Structure formats: structure tokens, C-alpha cells
Image (cartoon, rainbow, N blue to C red; front, side, top):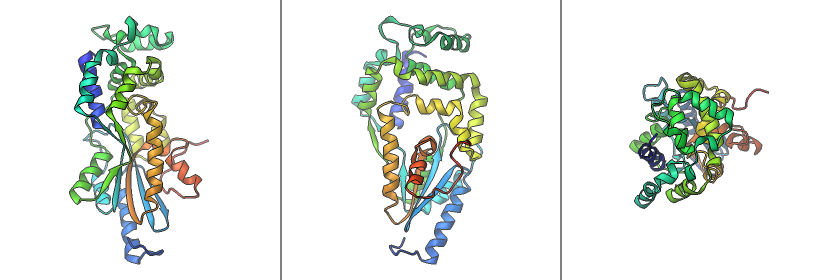
Length: 315
């Protein structure tokens, strides 16, 4: 991938980022049941958590759901319209100055430092696998590409779908049309992400390239298996998929400084929503909800009962 393509990819990733009574009235309870049943019909993993007269519906979203993929976004739209408030994923907000700075430093971001090549930064066995994947390339420019840029290439080869309509987009559009209030669980500043891209050593992203290589070796079939596991509510299978692991480890989701903040914010936002009456619908990355020690495990440790598909892998 050329410097220009790396800039476009990085810029795109950067910019995109009831009653108060203790016992609800029968009509309110019926409405709540309707919302939960409707949300489940969407065919996306979801969990319901209740505390007092507060209910949080957590939808486990994944990146890269193609527009023509067979799930039921209209059911999620209906559930959104019946919710009182929405929690959205973290947002990355970049100013024009941030984008200009990134473009100014694009060679630092898109290329390996000090005239080194990929052979200087990855173990020999991984280099052999990369050479096998890149055997049909017309150019050897990938050998001097940054590990972040190389990961974008590998995820593309793995069948990553960048232009899709996943759960966050469905919920946001429905909430905007119905004027349902909502907010992201937090905001990441563009300058923070750019600083990391410029200053962190290539070794930071070695694990990302390793898993992205495995995903590229599996190809589009692996990406299709991930989608089918997601819509089939087989959560451990989704998290075990190499493409999903790579998307969780690679930039920007796997940024070593930002990722822990995202996880903390989702746990805090969910607990805050459980202090408010009525139904809150949250659209969170599935991995953050269901990974070991994630939001669902934390809720369970508090004595709450997240009702939904099994998220823990079988012993």
C-alpha cells in the first residue's frame, strides 16, 4: 500500500470514529417485554440487565457487516424507537489541524523507520508467511511499509468489509429519526491517536500483524464464518475468529493507550444507565462486552444477571 493509500485509510479510521415507582405498572412491564422481544429478533447478540426499575439492553456489535448481509436491522430499529436513551460507541474526533498534521507526517506513519525493512521487525517464521501471502504482489513496497499499513493490507485480504451497515449505524439512524436522545460513552481526541502513530515503536503492532496474517490466510471464508457466528449468536466462536481478534488488536481499536480507556468507559456507562429508570439501549463492541473480564463478566460479578446468549467459552 502506498503512502497515499495509507493516509486515506488512516484518515478514514480516525474521522469515523418509566415510572419512578419501585414496581412498574403492568402496561410498562408489557412495553418492556415487547422491546426485549423485538430486539432479540434482530439476530444480533444482546443481553438484558435489570436493576430495580432500570433496564439496559446491550447489543454486541461487530465491525464489517455488509449491507446485503441477512440479518434483521428493522427489528433493532423498532427496539431503538421504544428505548428511552441510547449509548453509542466511543467516538474519535479529529480537527482539520489533526488531519493536516497526520498528512505532514505520513512518511513517519506509513513507512518503517531508518531504512529498515519488515525483516528487521518480525520473526523469520512470520516473514515466510508474509512472503507467501504477498507472492503475487507486483511491488515489494510492502517490505518497507509500517506494521500499521501492512495490517490494513492484511485485513483487506482477509475479507474485511469496510462499507457496511452494522448495528451502530442502524441504531443511530433510527434514534435520530425518532428523536431518541443518546451519547457516546466517551470521546478520543485525534491528536492522541496521531501522537501514538508517530511515537510508538513498530513492535507495538507486531501482535496485530501476526493475527492479521492468520486472518489473511483464512481469507474471505474466515470472514464469512465470523459473520455467521455473530448472527447465529455463537459469541465465543466470534471472539475466537482470527479476523475478529485482529480487528480487536490492530489500530485504532487496539491502540495500547486508548483500548483500556474504552473498556473502562463502557463499564462505567452501563452502571450509570442502571441507575436511571426506563430502558437504555447500548450498542457496544461485542469483544468489549464478552471478552474475559469484560462488561458482562463485571456485571455478573456484581450479582446481576445478564440474560442472553452464552458468552463464555466452554471449559
